[in-house]
Image (cartoon, rainbow, N blue to C red; front, side):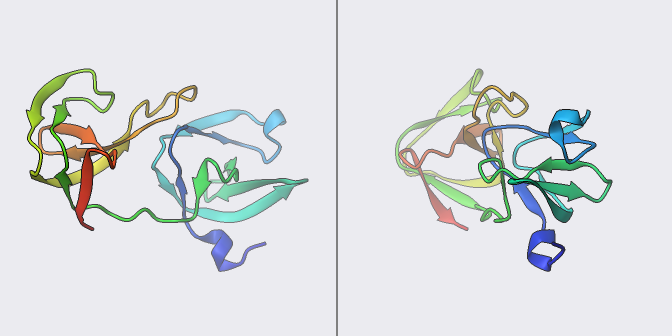
Length: 148
């Protein structure tokens, strides 16, 4: 159970926050913390409880092993994007406060990325790129990756 592939860091995938629990049987465990989607965590080992997988963290707590919510794949870093159409720049990741419109064909430097509804467990998040001044969409209909 402790081979290196199973002990690599895992990335908490898009859409949900992951709850950290103190026991491998989640129905009997108590909540200890929440990890925001997109967070990379280091695991000590993978634990099976019947057909269910759990990842044990270095501090002794557990997170789900559900493939829909965690992945061992590291995301490719995007450095620059080019706009295909006019897009809007927003002040916040949930796109509630518009700052300005960015013209088509403009190349933008990406500072980072985040998901909308970051801590909301009931809503799936949408990937957004953080650029200087705010956030823009990561939708491939509106932008293309110029440089990885």
